[in-house]
Amino acid sequence: MKKNDAKEEIKITKEFNMGELVYKHPSAEEVLLDYGLHCAGCFANSFDTVEAGAKAHGMTDAEIDEMLERVNEDICIGSATCVVMAPDAFELDSEGISVVKTDALKVDQETLLNAAKSCPVQAIHVFDEDGTRIFPA
Image: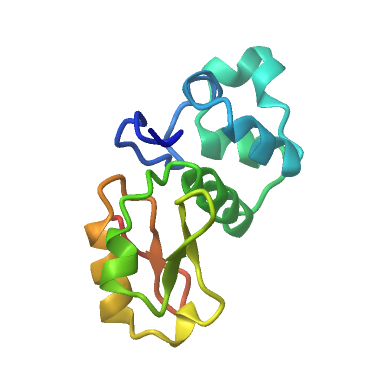
């Protein structure tokens, strides 16, 4: 059994409670630390959403979105539906987790969107040229 087989289907969003994030997904703490957020030991983590906590530390919307993308990458369970739907955009790494290929942006948006929709845990986020999230809504 791979390490990610037992993960529940969940997507971390800006509205997610910060305390719940670090409690239920301890691996997210490393990503948060990379962005200067010491949420695991903070007394306020149970009161803040991810967005509120990050903005209190001066993060921009773009930085928050980037951070959440990294947190959600850890949610991948390796079902490989994205690899089947968009083999030019995704591949499995040595641990059986989907990763984005360097030329993924050359793949048409419809194919990327279909690959994202096929992910059983919604680990793939698709944005338009203006940075607006298309999927998941």
